[in-house]
Length: 132
Image 1 (spheres, rainbow, N blue to C red):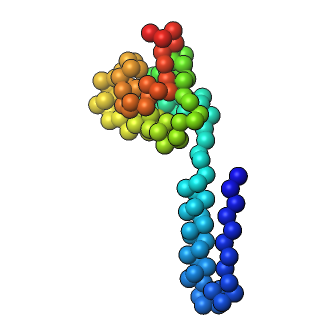
Image 2: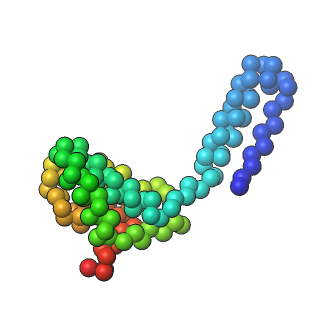
Image 3: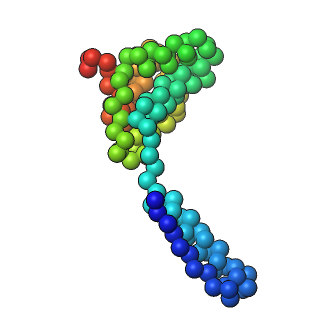
């Protein structure tokens, strides 16, 4: 746990607080930048499956197909996400899948390798069951 100490003199508070506000913003920025974001490995894999399901539904309006794709992806792929990988890198996969166009969704169909080719990071966090 990181602790930031910001000293603000009473004179700064009386002067309209510009220095106080600046110091607070700097402290907030430091805290955000220095706090490592963590994730549970299975959460990111579930988010990939949810992205597939969401894009399927958005493009086809078929709730059954969307649910089936979610469950198929979860059952056919094993989560291999490394919790030490930076959050931004890992989450590139579900974000990229979620940004596929309806044309790309239609082309991918039930071929999950095509879905996962949306980002090279997907290969780092999901592996086919049985390694095939």
